[in-house]
Length: 135
Ligand code: FES
Image (cartoon, rainbow, N blue to C red; front, top):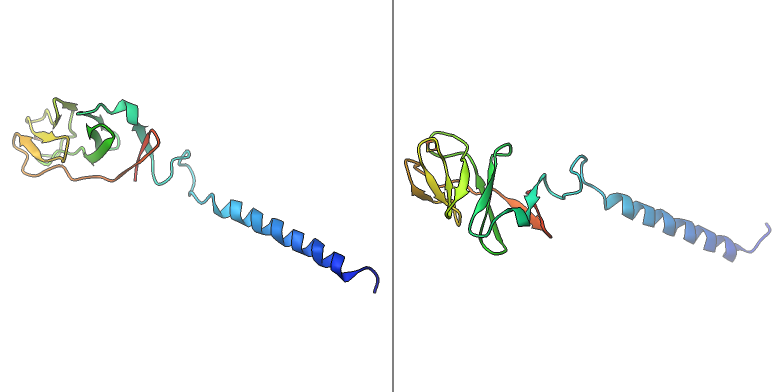
């Protein structure tokens, strides 16, 4: 029965505050590991590596990223809809499959030539600052 109760209340309140703050910083970091800092998915490349009017093929990820107009990034499956080769390169505004000569437009993946029966399906990417990641 000694000591002023008001003082004890102050100490408890401070303790609760710091517990809350600690809780916040833990919940803010909920990436489930191994991402290397890119939220949402694996980082593919930097925006500066994708030429305007062209694009870049990522064979391992089977993705092609294009930049039809400055600052407008798109991504498509890099698996050719003809017979399943991974497209080889982006050149002169088209994504080219060298297996049998199919070409797809960088703007929307639609068929520009060759035997491919369908457009390249779109893939989702996230552009954050100057970094492009799979979504
Ligand atoms: Fe691409 Fe045939 S697999 S053109």
